[in-house]
Amino acid sequence: MGDHHQPIRALAADVMLAVENGQSLSQCLPPALNDLPPNDRPVLQALCYGTCRWFHRLDGELQTRLKKPLRKPDRIVHHLMLVALFQLRFSQHASYAILNESVEACRALDKPHLTGLVNGVLRAAEREGAPEPEDDAARYSHPAWMVEKLRHNWPEDWRNILEGNNAQAPMTLRVNALRFSRDAYLNLLQEAGIDATPTRLAPHGIQLARPVPVDRLPWFDDGAVSVQDEAAQLCTTILDLAPRQRVLDACAAPGGKTCAILEACGELAEVVAIDESADRLPRVQENLDRLDLQAILKQADAAAVDQWWDGQAFDRILLDVPCSASGVIRRHPDIKLLRRESDIVPLAAIQLGLLNAMWSILKPGGRLVYATCSVFPQENHRIIQRFRKQQDSAILVEPEVQWGRDMGAGRQLLPDPNSHDGFFYAVLEKPES
Ligand SMILES: C[S@@+](CC[C@H](N)C(=O)[O-])C[C@H]1O[C@@H](n2cnc3c(N)ncnc32)[C@H](O)[C@@H]1O
Image: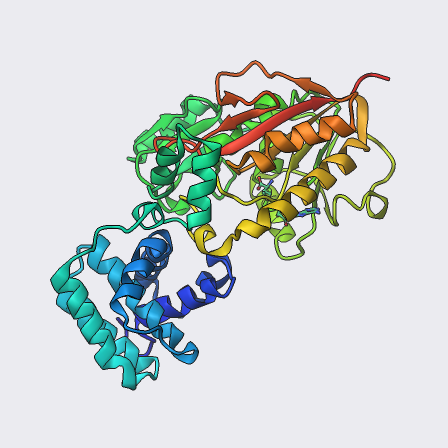
């Protein structure tokens, strides 16, 4: 740990406090990482991801160890202890070092009156070992409402889903089909000493045996490959893309699927990519630039069609709606802290509203693919069912694919510890006239 910096674990406690107050790791972690010398950055990242992942287990333990909760201004010390508990339970770090550094960090956080508490709690935790989890929320380390919802929605699979959410996700690439065949790129990886296999479901996907920094990937800067989960890649296999089509990607940022679409069919008439977030939309352009692809970008609420649409209907629409992200918790463990049960009904209303709006600008004979990275039926096949009650002419297409479960109105992929994230896709077509 560098002399001139905040101790890493003080920074980790700071990040955890920000997450508890509603910021995502992708918002609050990068500035904290920039405060550290490059060598220390992976340590901070691992502490924050791990503490989020195991928060609901560790927090239960910490609450029983504390005789009374800390005062609000001292809340950061609660997170400092959670970070230490995470290491005690889930790392090889020596326990005396965890204790000493935590006490030191408590001082660095300007809370000298709490060093005795930190020392006492962590000493007891070390001596007594981890308690038996009190319930499934602690056992699987998820908020209780999520455990209940998954148990209700997936009576056969809920335990696997919860356990899978706590495992490390693989790093998966999408080969830019305009540049390389998958086999050719697999050869390049082999020459570079990177262990990799083709994905089973996605035609251009490659799964790495171990994650590597992207700058180690051959020709990454020149657009040879992108990092994208296998389930996310599947969108192009059901869009039925063909030359001269006008394609809309209605919720596009950061552009993973926009770029996949452009790579999958080189002669599209145009691709329009919309996102309402001014912060996220530039990421789409960065990805397009690296891959040397072109799309028309617009910052807008896709549903407010009169504010951005030129009146020409689209042949293909990808609607990758904002959702609970309950299918990607293994990659974004902060979702466990950020998401509330009360988010789901308003999200479903937004999803159905977007679907109706996009339907109105789809060409007769055109195809719309609805996608989420959720495992909650409320955001998935129930949206499609509700939509079809309102638009009874909409044709539900059964894609001929080998993946996912048929939900009667779309296909659900549950997260697979050995490969893809949790995802949902439904394919709808508008009658010719
Ligand atoms: C699931 S993410 C999209 C991921 C993207 N399709 C990809 O594959 O990289 C959903 C996106 O929808 C955007 N969004 C949310 N509500 C929107 C709206 N009403 N109109 C347009 N974009 C919206 C969010 O800013 C977010 O970037």
